[in-house]
Length: 238
Image (cartoon, rainbow, N blue to C red):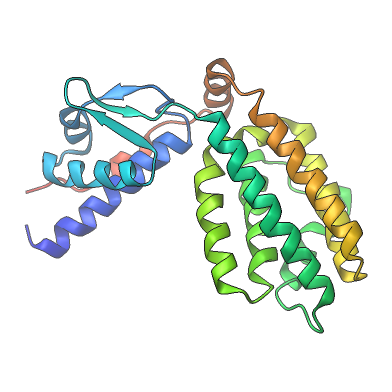
C-alpha cells in the first residue's frame, strides 16, 4: 500500500475510534487490544497503532505494556480546570464583541438561536453540535486567531462530556433560552450583562460534570441508540 493510502486509512481509523469514544460505544476505562481493532476494521496493526498513538497524544486513550490500550478514565478535576479557562476566554470575547464597532459573524447565530419556541430543534445531539458552534463562533467573531485556537483545543477536549448535557430535554430548551439572552445583550452592547449571563450558562454546564457517573454514560449510550457503524465504511488493507 502506498504511503498516502496508508495515511488516509490511518486517519479514517482514528476518526472511527474517536467517534466510538465520543458516542460512548467505548466507555472510560474500557480495555482493548490493537489486534481487536485491526480485526474489526479489516486492517493491519500498523495504521491501527498510528491512529491509537495519535489518540494517546490527544489524551483520549492510554497504553500499558501488559494490558494493552484503555480508554482514559475521566479526570473530573482536569475537566473543571478546562471549564475555568473556557469561561475566561469566552467572557473576554463577549466583552470585546460588545465594544467592537462591527461584530461580524453573529448573523448566523441570530438565525439559529433567535427563533420562536415552535421553531426550535428538539434533537439532543443536533442541538449539542449547534451549542458547540455557538461558543466557537463567539470567540472567532472577535478576530483574535490565537484566542480562537486555544478555545478550539479546549472545546475538543470537553466535547466528550458536554454531550451528556443534551440527553435531557430541559437542557435543550434551556440552551435556546440562554443563548438568546446572551446574543441580545451583545447586540445591545451590554458587556457586564453579557458576561454575567455567559458565566452562569457555562457554570451550569460545568455543574453537570460533577453529576456524571459510568451508569449515566451507559444510559446515555442506550438512550441514543448508538452503534459502531463507522467501521463499516473502512476499506480492507491489501
